[in-house]
Length: 99
Image 1 (cartoon, rainbow, N blue to C red):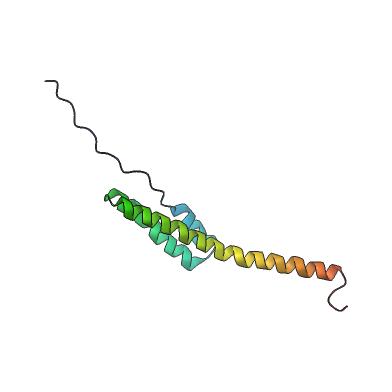
Image 2: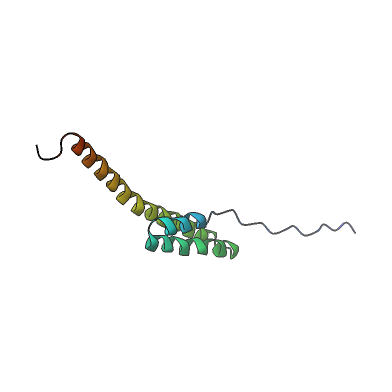
């Protein structure tokens, strides 16, 4: 009568899905690349629960990559704009481009 209860199944390792970052990069950065990131982020938990750990890790990696690409697509124009404003602002303070 000393039967041991069955062991609980091993839980799958935690794999970040980067869904929050994907949504924020979609809203505030670049819409098309952000949507790609959301699609890959949505696949992570389903693949992990199905036991496809390698597929979940790959989807997580792709979600993070596309979120970074989306954020980068927003940072490049902002940086160029600020550079443009400060360079032209500095030129105008020095007497303009007229010589």
